[in-house]
Length: 198
Image (cartoon, rainbow, N blue to C red):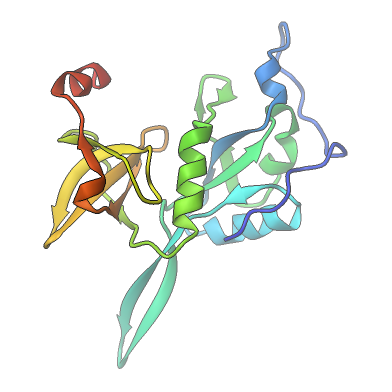
């Protein structure tokens, strides 16, 4: 689903937390929005209608129904839609029906890395064989050095005869696997794995 232009300055601002203002609250960043079950597309449509920049990655799944096969468009990260906003402008997002909360730790939502979100948005809006995958972070870690997912790190796995890399968003405990040419993979040193798991 295509994202739209960022919110205008005329939106209602949420009250700021007590204490000195943190300038990060005024800068636009990506956040994960947790939705009611099976309401991801409905939330995305509401965000679209309100002019809020968002991203709902999807994949295509073929299901067999009685005497026919149906191609469905399913959320790649079930239960989540990504939104880009300044935290001081989050009130219109929190008022969207079926949107439960912005994911984070403590009293404020936690921003996702801009560089990772830019790569995912660019790559997942194209026709790539991304599929949901069970969440895990342990295994042989690799860096993708070429292609649409260049710059991301993940865990190498093999499905049938194809090499795939499992990309995990730890904040939401969700993973997706993408097919990558072996020539575009760089195995990371084991000491880097150990430091990341601490």
